[in-house]
Image (cartoon, rainbow, N blue to C red; front, side):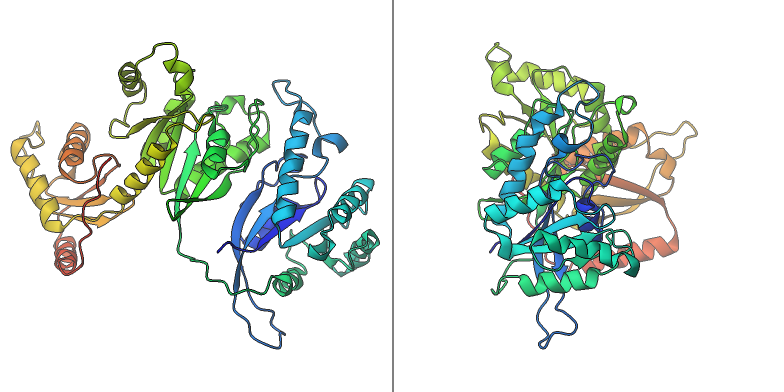
Length: 487
């Protein structure tokens, strides 16, 4: 069953994003004084404990916490035009549409005001809109920026909005948050939670600006989950979207579009770039989205290098292929072009899609699931040793000094990514060109044909050899997972 939803709403610069981060105990939403940083619905799952002074010790509850854009963000204040002259007021209706969806689906609404700035006409306008939607019973008024006892009287001014006495908190230093957690817990719907808390498979969608990442997210989700606009750089935060496909729950991570770092217009774009890198780190599989109507850029190549550096299973997704195929471009020719331009990802599968027309999405998701299974497979120690020994017999590393390369032992120590340790007489003989050769052969002979493999070369020591042999013997008794099927 779906989780209860708690939406955070308010005007710009009241600290909604800071409050979400504080409640989540991690940096989920970008925080910056620039109005309009948050545009989409940014969500995360948190755990709320039973109130300490409750008569009954209830179970902890999982809820989905949702940050929304600031209402009236480009009407009330802020920079109207971005660095390339696009009129940002065009995003206002999309932002407010996302706020409306969040309000309609929420079980609880945290209406946040700024205690230090006091009530504004925009706060009163938002309060009127909330009353018109007849959701007053859902609302918990929250006075933020109450950094100590002396600010409480200022926070209590929010009582004038008509939703009762506000809870006074500080997202900056944590003042009053225990009372807010308790209030949210007590307002949660009474129902048994049977939600599977096991971590879903996460896949991130990365690419340069206007490649179609948000359109792809919406097509997969079957709804307008994130804002799609011709204005470059619309997406700022990395947005997690839960998708139910073929009885499996997946998390799709939409990320900010990337451009050259020297072109960054402000701190927000810098933060968005680093959130994108964090999204790659926490993803199990990454979709590298390529705009088929544009030439491969330095940004695409830079992302390719980052994916290799992090050993991330990657599917290269060629979007807008319907526009290119109409001009007579053949997939085989484009495949050769990609192989030449995106070096180092020769093993990565390629899928052609049209996110706007929802074409090719079934094959895309099937490939993502297949890569996840490949990266999670653990090969037996005996098979790893046999394969590597055969490769060395056919062609071993050469040395100008005449030192003969020797393999003493090899074993797989990790999955996601598959990581193989080789205990050898001289690690220097194996790195460089021979390592590339060995990886190519391992992709062919082990069930990891489309995912990265991490190799670690270690010089033999008695302690290392004893530990690895013991680990290998222990795994003989473990259940070996069958090799994944390839698509």
